[in-house]
Structure formats: structure tokens, C-alpha cells
Amino acid sequence: MLWKLEGYNTWMFIAKDGESLQFYAPFGDGNATLKKVNTWNQTRRYSRSYLDDEGDPRLELDLDMAGGVTVARIKDFFLTCRVSFTAWTAEVVQ
Image (cartoon, rainbow, N blue to C red):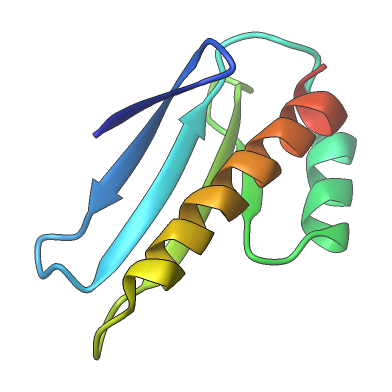
């Protein structure tokens, strides 16, 4: 599912088994460095960032839905994704 955040394309993937949901934000430009990515990963919980093979930054968050989740939990996950993406673009990408 495509999710437009702050003018950028981000994605939500549902696993084939339906037991996990992943937020994925690719970024094709910006000023991301390995140092910024490492700082993000050392200081943030619930998300991970990395540079792909071409040096472009990526942000991912996962929600484990095995055993079931509430609607409130899914809404909170979407909020966490949005807040993380906003902070990540400011701290890692810019």
C-alpha cells in the first residue's frame, strides 16, 4: 500500500501470512551519511535505518501481528511510523 507522507512515497507491506506489517521509506536523495544512520540506530527504538547498495537511505518499522492485535495498536503503529519518518527525514536525510 502506498502511503504519501510529507510529499514522499512510503510503503506499507503486509506479510503473506498476515502476521506482520512493515513500513518502508526509501529515499533517493538527500544528505544521509553512515554516521547519521548509525546515530539514528543507536538512539532510536522501534525503527531501523540503513544505506542501500547505492548509498540511499532507507527507514523500516515492523509490527508483529502474530496472535492478533487491536485496531488501537494498528493506529498507534501508523502514528509511530509518521513520527519516526518526520524525525528521520530531519535528522538523517536532510
